[in-house]
Image 1 (cartoon, rainbow, N blue to C red):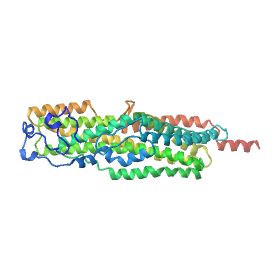
Image 2: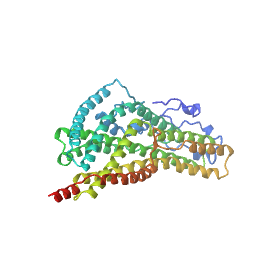
Image 3: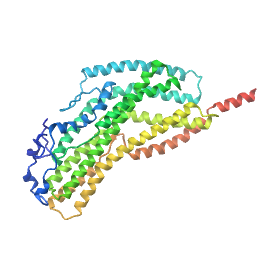
Image 4: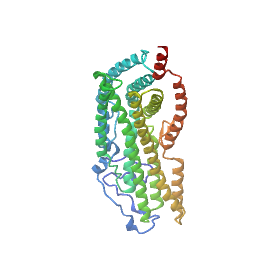
Amino acid sequence: MVSKPNHFLPAQIAHVGLQDPLAINSENRKKFYIGKPELCAPTGISTDADVSNEFFHNQLKPLFIVMRFFGFLPIKLLFRGVSKFQLFSSIMAYSMCIYAVTTVIICFIVGDLSSVLFSGKIDFLNTIFYSMLILFMFTSISSPVLLWLDASNYVHYINKWTEFQILFLKVTHNRLSLNVKKRCIFHAIRCSTIGFAAIAFHFSTPYIRIWQIPGFFYAITLVSCYLTLWITTCGNLSTAGKSLSRNFKEELRRKCYTAQSIGQYRILWLRLSQLVSRSGGAMEKTSCIFFAVYLFIMTMSLYGFLYGITSEAEIPIQSIGMGIGTVTGGCTFYVTCNAAHKVHLNVKAEIEEELQLIMSSRENHDVLIEVNAFLNTISSHPPVISVAGFFDVNREMLRSYASTVVTYMIVLLQFGMGQPNNRQMNATQNTTK
């Protein structure tokens, strides 16, 4: 596969195919070269097949296959070439059939849970519990549709990854090795089987029936696939940032950098920063609803746990379950925010430090101009993961959520204290007798 011409690179570089990634004009290198020319020789040779295997979509293919199997992501992935999303295609028809079957099951589950919720025979703690389950099941109905609406954007994002990896090869003369395929195979197996945890709900609260297990299986698998895709994407962005910094440092160490080479690294870094910024928008509709519902359910789960241990004579099984859910959800939320935070550090911090060192040294005037332009590019295009512009995902988001949830938890617990609990009802009944 030959990439399209890139206006950021000289014409003789832009038309270089993947089988000849070393054809960067040596005369341009010597224009402002520093050090010995022989030290500026390319460091590696890659074939078309090698590069194609390292493409982002080929590395994540096991995870994409699982998502396609469950009808979450009906896109066509090619080993070489651009990925595609077609509304009228066989994979889309298959996804709609899976969605129709699971939606019918989930609607019956929601009806079952709603009948218990509005029966008036359950206490305040069970009201919280069943409300969370109903919201969770409604999310599993809406999320696949939102994923379909985001599919074209995500395909565009995948193709941007391919363009970046080709440009990375041309500028650094090295492949961008993500090395996550084996890990994705493990994640694909885990995502395919974690839904069997729904069987536990058959033997404990809410004691779902056998026919309801597929609906819970589908919902748990959906959440697991989305979280895994998010964290894996952040990991790949961090790997790309580390690889770019490592190659840039190596070029500085060999003293063979030029104004032109620094300019090429600047464009390469800008493309990576754009990938980071677009990662939150690639599935913006799904991400918005997912984070909103996820944080709300986690907050109510924490509230239910605290209410149960403070208002009941004995800690009920629902409260224990919500406590386990709170801990699991909190750990997952931390991993999600921490992965995004590491992307920011790995893409920006290391290379910015190296550029500052060059600015403090005595270098060629043209080199200093390019370094200054590079620093300006970093400051004007920070690598921040933003979800549709509503919020940034990083450690600051975790801190903000923690401070907010403490405030609301105090209010909710005060509200809950006004509700009659089992302990108070039993005391009242004994007094009457």
